[in-house]
Length: 221
Image (cartoon, rainbow, N blue to C red; front, top):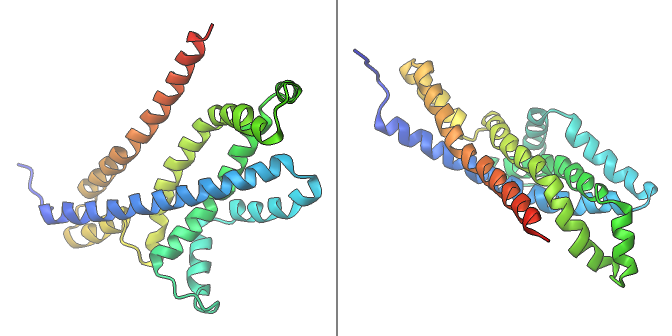
């Protein structure tokens, strides 16, 4: 007969950790999307000599492992005079990390718009802002959505690394319970199911949006 020391209180503890995971993901994706949109637009439109410093900073954020970034910022905050909580540190690092990848998604989406399409828009009397708003951004959104969905799901899983700076998110709470009851298979299975429950609606939402756009395109005369 199946016997376990896992209790309802343990499940609640894991769900609290999952809530912290959701909070970190939402903040990081929101910050990263806003910054990534601005940087992506800048990288796609500014001259090369202005792109170099932006690209260099983003390359560092993409190249240095996320765990190292978390540890360095968490250790260096006091030297810089910042009284940040671990949650703030995690949000800032994850937000910048997300922005570095979101920048390339936005940049790729903008550059995917054919030059002839933009020239046609300008020939119809559209201003630069109208061209971006009504022509470039809608096309770039469709091109970049799958990459953005994948990035969001990746950030949710990468947020587990904040356990190294003292945040008891889902994975850390699972480890605490495993240490106490010594049932890693059961606890990690439950943690995996919770991650799936958090991730599945996001992936389905992305697929639904893509399908609705395809249907709208087919319905156009």
